Image (cartoon, rainbow, N blue to C red; front, side):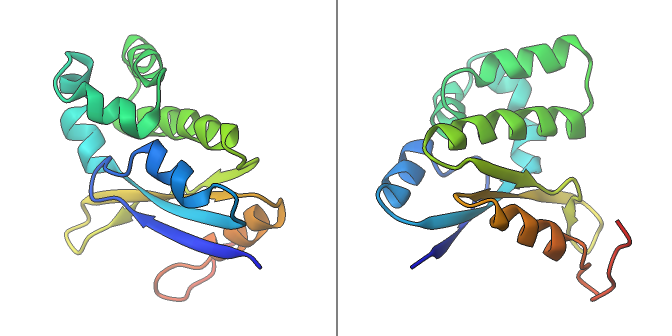
Length: 146
Protein backbone atom coordinates (compact mmCIF):
# COMPACT_ATOMS: atom_id res chain seq x y z
CA UNK A 1 0.00 0.00 0.00
CA UNK A 2 1.24 3.49 -0.89
CA UNK A 3 0.37 6.65 1.00
CA UNK A 4 0.70 10.33 0.26
CA UNK A 5 1.59 12.91 2.89
CA UNK A 6 0.97 16.58 2.23
CA UNK A 7 3.34 18.73 4.26
CA UNK A 8 1.97 22.26 4.30
CA UNK A 9 4.66 24.51 5.70
CA UNK A 10 3.60 27.98 6.79
CA UNK A 11 7.27 28.90 6.68
CA UNK A 12 10.29 26.66 6.82
CA UNK A 13 8.65 24.90 9.74
CA UNK A 14 8.67 21.12 9.39
CA UNK A 15 12.13 19.85 10.38
CA UNK A 16 13.81 17.13 8.34
CA UNK A 17 13.78 14.90 11.44
CA UNK A 18 9.97 15.06 11.45
CA UNK A 19 9.84 13.94 7.83
CA UNK A 20 12.27 11.12 8.62
CA UNK A 21 10.07 9.96 11.52
CA UNK A 22 6.88 10.22 9.43
CA UNK A 23 8.26 8.16 6.55
CA UNK A 24 10.59 5.65 8.18
CA UNK A 25 9.61 2.13 7.14
CA UNK A 26 6.57 3.39 5.20
CA UNK A 27 5.74 3.58 1.52
CA UNK A 28 4.66 7.19 1.44
CA UNK A 29 5.29 9.86 -1.16
CA UNK A 30 5.46 13.52 -0.15
CA UNK A 31 4.03 16.73 -1.54
CA UNK A 32 5.62 19.66 0.26
CA UNK A 33 4.87 23.36 0.09
CA UNK A 34 8.07 25.36 -0.01
CA UNK A 35 7.24 28.81 1.30
CA UNK A 36 8.90 31.64 -0.59
CA UNK A 37 7.90 34.42 1.80
CA UNK A 38 9.94 33.02 4.68
CA UNK A 39 12.87 32.57 2.35
CA UNK A 40 12.66 36.13 0.99
CA UNK A 41 12.13 37.77 4.38
CA UNK A 42 14.59 35.80 6.44
CA UNK A 43 17.42 34.38 4.34
CA UNK A 44 19.85 37.24 4.98
CA UNK A 45 18.97 37.21 8.68
CA UNK A 46 19.60 33.46 8.84
CA UNK A 47 22.96 33.95 7.13
CA UNK A 48 23.80 36.43 9.92
CA UNK A 49 22.93 33.75 12.51
CA UNK A 50 19.41 34.92 13.42
CA UNK A 51 17.12 31.88 13.65
CA UNK A 52 19.80 29.79 11.94
CA UNK A 53 18.89 26.69 13.97
CA UNK A 54 15.38 26.63 12.45
CA UNK A 55 16.85 26.78 8.95
CA UNK A 56 19.32 23.99 9.74
CA UNK A 57 16.52 21.87 11.20
CA UNK A 58 14.47 22.40 8.02
CA UNK A 59 17.17 21.96 5.37
CA UNK A 60 19.79 19.97 7.23
CA UNK A 61 23.48 20.79 7.39
CA UNK A 62 24.94 22.47 4.32
CA UNK A 63 22.15 24.92 3.44
CA UNK A 64 24.31 27.88 4.43
CA UNK A 65 26.92 27.11 1.77
CA UNK A 66 24.22 26.90 -0.91
CA UNK A 67 22.71 30.22 0.19
CA UNK A 68 26.08 31.95 0.43
CA UNK A 69 27.00 30.75 -3.06
CA UNK A 70 23.67 32.09 -4.36
CA UNK A 71 24.48 35.43 -2.73
CA UNK A 72 27.98 35.46 -4.27
CA UNK A 73 26.47 34.76 -7.68
CA UNK A 74 23.94 37.56 -7.06
CA UNK A 75 21.00 35.27 -7.81
CA UNK A 76 17.48 36.60 -7.47
CA UNK A 77 14.95 35.21 -5.01
CA UNK A 78 13.46 32.73 -7.50
CA UNK A 79 16.83 31.30 -8.51
CA UNK A 80 17.96 31.13 -4.89
CA UNK A 81 14.76 29.26 -4.07
CA UNK A 82 15.53 26.80 -6.86
CA UNK A 83 19.07 26.26 -5.54
CA UNK A 84 17.75 25.62 -2.03
CA UNK A 85 14.97 23.36 -3.35
CA UNK A 86 17.56 21.31 -5.22
CA UNK A 87 19.64 21.08 -2.04
CA UNK A 88 16.54 20.08 -0.03
CA UNK A 89 15.91 17.38 -2.62
CA UNK A 90 19.35 15.90 -1.95
CA UNK A 91 18.44 15.64 1.74
CA UNK A 92 15.20 13.85 0.84
CA UNK A 93 17.15 11.51 -1.45
CA UNK A 94 19.37 10.63 1.50
CA UNK A 95 16.32 9.27 3.37
CA UNK A 96 15.09 7.17 0.45
CA UNK A 97 13.32 9.56 -1.92
CA UNK A 98 15.13 8.94 -5.19
CA UNK A 99 12.59 10.74 -7.39
CA UNK A 100 12.30 14.47 -6.75
CA UNK A 101 10.50 17.11 -8.78
CA UNK A 102 9.47 20.65 -8.04
CA UNK A 103 7.28 23.14 -9.76
CA UNK A 104 8.90 26.29 -11.07
CA UNK A 105 5.46 27.85 -11.16
CA UNK A 106 4.87 30.01 -8.12
CA UNK A 107 1.49 29.68 -6.40
CA UNK A 108 0.13 33.15 -5.72
CA UNK A 109 -2.57 34.69 -3.60
CA UNK A 110 -5.42 36.88 -4.88
CA UNK A 111 -3.07 39.89 -4.92
CA UNK A 112 -0.54 38.02 -7.10
CA UNK A 113 1.96 37.79 -4.26
CA UNK A 114 4.12 34.67 -4.64
CA UNK A 115 3.52 32.30 -1.75
CA UNK A 116 5.02 28.90 -2.41
CA UNK A 117 6.24 26.28 -4.83
CA UNK A 118 5.39 22.60 -4.68
CA UNK A 119 7.90 19.82 -4.29
CA UNK A 120 7.24 16.13 -4.82
CA UNK A 121 9.39 13.42 -3.27
CA UNK A 122 8.59 9.94 -4.51
CA UNK A 123 10.00 6.51 -3.89
CA UNK A 124 9.00 5.32 -7.37
CA UNK A 125 9.82 7.00 -10.69
CA UNK A 126 6.15 7.12 -11.72
CA UNK A 127 5.46 9.68 -8.99
CA UNK A 128 7.43 12.28 -10.95
CA UNK A 129 5.51 11.40 -14.13
CA UNK A 130 2.21 12.00 -12.33
CA UNK A 131 3.51 15.24 -10.80
CA UNK A 132 4.54 16.61 -14.21
CA UNK A 133 1.17 15.69 -15.74
CA UNK A 134 -0.77 17.28 -12.90
CA UNK A 135 1.47 20.38 -13.02
CA UNK A 136 0.29 21.02 -16.57
CA UNK A 137 -3.21 21.80 -15.27
CA UNK A 138 -3.76 25.33 -14.05
CA UNK A 139 -6.18 26.23 -11.25
CA UNK A 140 -8.72 27.30 -13.88
CA UNK A 141 -8.56 23.85 -15.48
CA UNK A 142 -6.62 25.13 -18.49
CA UNK A 143 -3.91 22.71 -19.59
CA UNK A 144 -0.45 23.95 -20.48
CA UNK A 145 1.24 22.87 -23.71
CA UNK A 146 4.61 21.95 -22.15
